[in-house]
Length: 337
Image (cartoon, rainbow, N blue to C red; front, top):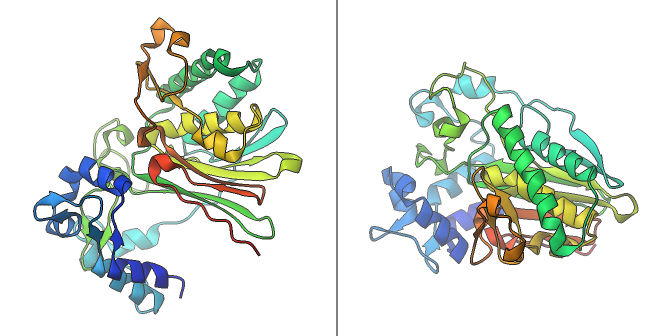
């Protein structure tokens, strides 16, 4: 059964690691909004911590029933107020052609509109493709200028996606490659009754609803910064990558592609390399870049360590490498055939 491992984990529980503990602490206010949230994410009136065991028995039973074919949809009662089974049934998946762009002899394929992330990544890579690559620390200004221009395009295009995003990259023995990004936002603290399934908070994110909550017409597809991406490097194979990180997704993906294609790094080194992000007011940067290279107008803010703020790129490449980003508790596995 496809869902059997998830059923077992939900029933037996998993030991909370430092990454999960940090995220739960950040979202404690949201996760404590309902009795279900408090029962799952709190022990003795405190958020679960590293070393505790997290269980979601209702979710395990729900998955078990789905796997057995006895549950095929949410009913009206479990969905709660404002959403009906008709609403869910009316949703349709739309297959779209990816954005394609050349970059330094490689071909990049990424998420098309109505997503914003792919357009912003493509714009930044196009800017960088028309400038001369520099060496080492001298290249920081070129990257930052591209990210500043990327931010300005984002402001013109409209709102971006929320947080709580993760990514999976897969390659099989035949060379088929897939990149998939999903998101629960920052979590909503609301659960589908009797299922253990927590709903996302996309309808409650201010940056997704600039005209105000409840103003979008029914059926409108909310925009996203999620950007599952493929990079075809010819003889070096195809790299699948993507990241969580809200508005940082766009800058993270650009930097990892530059590390791979321009700088010739291994996938591991490309993901581990220090990152920067332009937030519209200042340059945030991880340890690594020389502070003396930072221009005063950037109002650069150094971070003391690598952090989940700068995304979490999970990637596979050419049938040889698989990398999970430690910034977001990523894991990787290569299975020998």
